[in-house]
Length: 317
Image 1 (cartoon, rainbow, N blue to C red):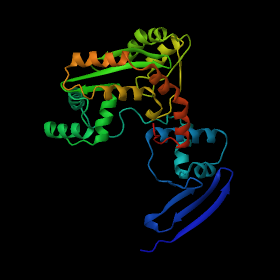
Image 2: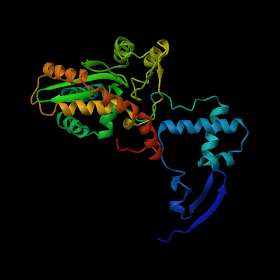
Image 3: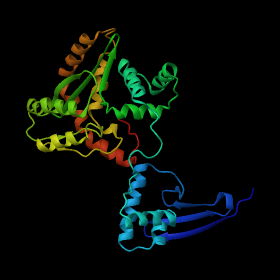
């Protein structure tokens, strides 16, 4: 089937773009190709609910400034009717957020979520697909890996560091600085934001004192418990300065190499029960070479530069 199309190019201060309009009635679409990133964006493409909501608020702000609906539609690459819907909600004082309880009912019951969590706790090294296979065989329910992942996130599971060798498996929290290592805390059960705050309250400043740090900045990633309100409140009240963490950047965290080093040291120890494994991990932790820790910590600025150069992609560290 032949499809007639029409291209319109324009040059603006933010870069060049080309609009391609497919004129076939059954396939009528508008696309914009922006340079120099060469990113293809469809007016009808899907987006996350969060970005969709942000777009609505941005459109509302432009409407309040007196911009025409046609101009806004063109600016945000949406239909004019979409802008009209936003305008109507403003006039009627309606919220942009979808009402609670609307939309498709949640697929997972609490019983299924608990089954997922139980399977995860039985083996912290289970893959998402293994958990999905278990749910299908035991509960006759087929779930995607993303559904399993979202269910685990809903329990606010901590991104804990597991050490598993032979018959034992332990999870640990620890901190380091250029002066060496702080405390190492073993974790039992499910980590919540409140549990995380308790660990910080009992170990963070104490670790700083043991490492002879009079002034320091605390670095942790964007795990939900790290960014929870109770955690932010604790850090603010304790006047602990933090480093803003970019999304999805584990390559920046120097302590990841410490965990890898510990696992490497454990590789030839054979089967260890849980308590013996804890003792061995703690022994390695307390004897980590100071020059190695310093090297990892001082590499942070290099990591930031590498991530910037690769535009947020994986770096070779």
